[in-house]
Amino acid sequence: MRTQFTAELIALTKDLTLMCTLAHDAVERVTDALVGADLTATYEVFALDEQLQKMYGACEARTVVLLALQAPVARDLRHVVTAIQIAGELSRIGWLASRVADQVYRSHPGHVATPPILDVLAAMGQLAARRTALAAQAVAGQVQAEEQTPAARSMETLHQQLHATLREPRTQPPTEVAIDIALLGHHLERCIDHTARIDRLIRFLDTGVPPTAQPSDDE
Image (tube, rainbow, N blue to C red; front, side, top):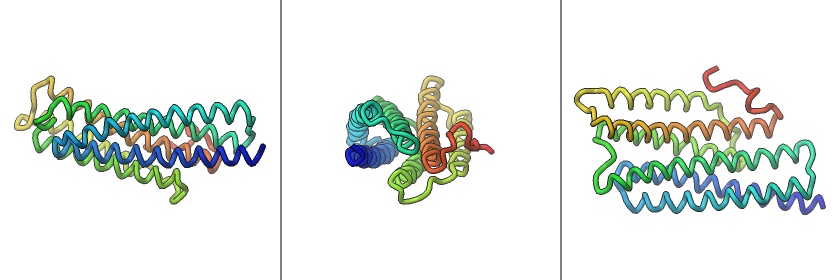
């Protein structure tokens, strides 16, 4: 029974590692799609998100079986619960990337924004991709989960820069377009939030300190 549980846990971890790769690829490709108004990259993001959602469903089913049939205790239970929560965060990153890709698709063959605004969106996407890659390394056990504060503050700075550029008379788009662009920025910012949540979940797995009891990003 214990051997079977260990095998299932290893398989679940491998699934999470693959989901991390898919999430990172989705954010990276959606940034490419934004910068180049690249329809091929846009379709790739849709496909990656579809894979992520299917894998999330499979991980959810696997954890239900583990909880119901294996009755794990202590650290094992923490491992299973943390795994499904991390899978949920990764599925949301895929969903957010897909929403950004949808805007690129609807704007094609044009860009979603003019160069000054597009530059900020590209920087937000690149930062989100880097943070997703680091989260993937942490899930794979290659590095310790990092403090998220520097990345969060960088994204906050970029978010403020985006809104300032949207209000700048020289670059200010029509109101409806500005709303769509602000939503794109929000989606990319939310990707960072989900990587921060993954970092806290990994610390919970290592230390037993619940995410809600850990220091917040602005502390």
